[in-house]
Image (cartoon, rainbow, N blue to C red; front, side):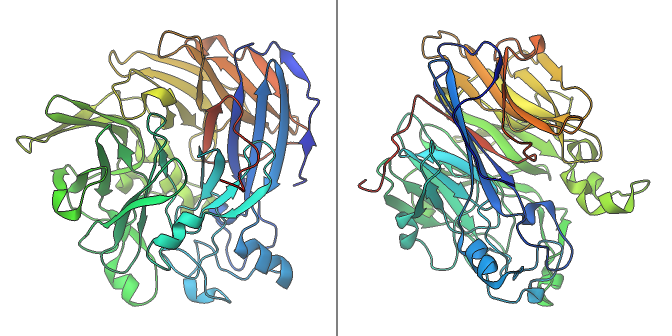
Length: 464
């Protein structure tokens, strides 16, 4: 894929005058042929950034210049086997909890302390870039203070109220997880172990005003396979466990809760209500994703990514910090995942989320959902056949008074016309369809995660 600086873009419709800021999203674009079987998450990380400024917009895209990509470019070939192969197929040592994996820094992106910070879900380096120009800044210096070799997991969490970024990492080595805090000046200020019974596969975390919430869920590597160097994921009939820890707390401050066996790929939000911690996420049943009967052979390895197969739906857990009681139940029965909220409500009581629906049997987003968590009311917009969107952040209106005053943005890939757009929706009425579409200079592939930062972050951060 070509890297672009597109400063004159065609706009279909009318961009809102109060939409000012940066929408940034990743994709995975393999530069070299795979070493063995290819998995979509093996591709090299690329960022796509569109900056809105007083009804004008600019688009740029850049590969993330990771150490792994540099090494493969120098060698002229792939050096690391992907997720569908054994690590011992790799030609060099690598990164990640799984070991000997290329860190493509392609899973997640946030904007923290004025820089875009990319991360990899199997744990790796944090790469920093200018959000608007996508100029590389380098690896985050604060990671020098964490456990050597562990890296950082995707789904770092930015709290707009404090400017802090919360993070976790995990490994096959005890204590198997850590949790930490980075301040708004991008300095590491807190880092503690979270002891687990063994190697796990956490993917996301949540936070409230005063607490961080980490998890020990029963979808993780098979212990016997691990002894033989294989990383086979299976669902264990164990309770779901949740660690609630004060944001600057110590290991002895952790309060553990147990709930029904489940797996959650992504959380929606969490907040405090009286003696309770409220945690919302997309509960799934991974055993359903193990069923491959009737699927084309090429799709069978990816059924665990299909939210229709695994039944991912918005769900709520309540943890009573005084009594230890846990109550849980669905927010709705309909399926969705990859939810985003008004970022100003992160860690606080909230009402709305904007999530994705997927094409059955595929890891392709085919629609938007707006869910009212207080009433269960759902709005839905379905894209035309062959048009796929991406995780869609909510951009609050700076003059808005309601939680849903603002816009929802998504990059789309149209397989019918080999084109892509950035589409803008009214967050309070997504059923009305896009109010504006910005034509991109080339078709981009689907991706995983995205972020919105209001106004224009400072471009030069090297003196920070």
